[in-house]
Length: 223
Ligand code: DX5
Ligand code: ZN
Image (cartoon, rainbow, N blue to C red; front, side):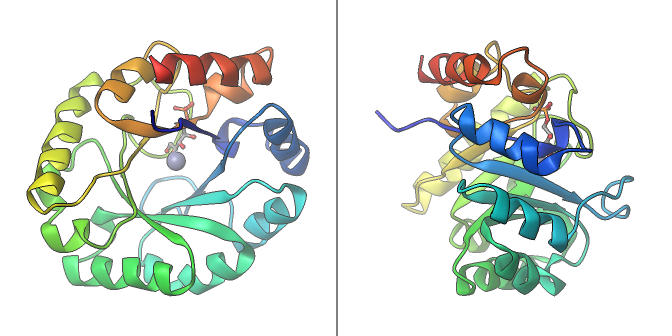
């Protein structure tokens, strides 16, 4: 059985104590720390930048998965890689196919895992063979990007099957990460669709006991 990866999203943590919250997630049994970066253009809000990723990389031993909800991500890949990202996920909507292929290559050139996210409104057909061949994981978002604590959108689910089918036709395996409204009720639905890595913001950081929440999620995702 494939190992289930639980990646708490620091966006749902107490924003005045980021290092302590990251440590709390690590102690609670997280596998990865998911760090959402927003530029106020791709999404309405602005939040962290490179210095925050550097700080988090120092605070915990967990691999950092940096989700760039930004325009022109190719301009900052080197900076986030140097800051300590283990994997970097960019959005397919952030540029042309050529720009995105080149950015995925750039991420890998800097020694990071390359992820490709799509917002709920973007169809699976946007993930072309050229893109599929370059990404280490695919993240079809199950909420509108920008906020944690939103409700899971079940209407996104057929997209997982469509992308998996396209990958199989190319003799590739689609490694899925889920992001948005993941909890112990939605994790089994996602797991059934082939998701093995689960980003969870509110379900972990807003739970009364983060360790119990992670354990519960892991169990739900293994069903
Ligand atoms: C949303 C972010 C998510 C968010 C998930 O734009 O990409 O990572 O923090 O939060 P929950 O799990 O609360 O939906
Ligand atoms: Zn995210």
